Image (cartoon, rainbow over all chains, first blue to last red):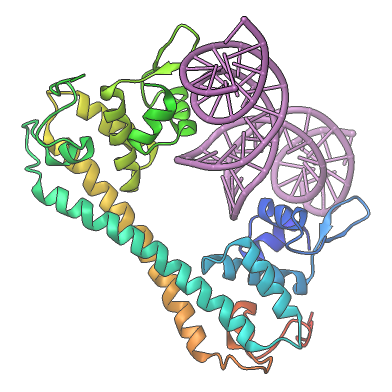
Length: 141
Length: 141
DNA sequence: CTTGACCTTCCCATCATGGGAAGCCCCATA
DNA sequence: TATGGGGCTTCCCATGATGGGAAGGTCAAG
């Protein structure tokens, strides 16, 4: 199987497959006589693993750890569980940040008339002033 | 005011101030005789505006649009409101994606014993198999 | 044998940010 | 007045994960 087929079969683009190999996330693929990378079902499975882990938001470093555990038949499932729990915590953190942004924006949007007039509490808030545009603002000092 | 003071006053790092100037997000700062960038309260206010908008998750392109509206005394507040609503939608989209990841992970974590044994439904899921590790998996075909 | 689809490597771009080097400038203190 | 320390300048590099594209080799079908 060439890289294109492996890409289709795994859902990982050929570009990414090469990149993963280059960075050592996955072992170097075998090569045909003419230098083409060759893949078998086992390699495709690894690629699908990576794909799935990435889809769950794991950064590449964590994917590498997951792969290592996957390969290690002596692993403790608690190690895997910890990685997953850390990832959940990371997601929660980012979600919370974005919820905060969203909340602020919703408040501002709520306060904005949204008509043809220029008066806009959103811009006022961003400007840090209250009811003043930069042009109007007195430049004291 | 030199760039360091402007950075402290605005919450934008000196690095970023130079970058914003370079990319045209903000106008070029004035220069002292010896080439130092100089800033006044007006410039600091612009920097704070950028900072605040970035804190709300607006990408730089959108911040540029917001700045343009801020400067435009003829703007319609509806234009600003639209930008804010788009940003809310973008945030919601990303939040939904991450909630989905989190949900999947929580399910997997729930199914994983998390003890010293190697059996792990999380890895099984990532591997796309059910109850098999890559080493065990028969390479049919 | 030609054509078109595929593969290779190499470089560049994204987005926003930080780190660091080399060299100049400014001010206070000895 | 000399010196030292901190601040400023530009320039280059790195991040993380991905895509785009060029130049050139390979393969299979017609």
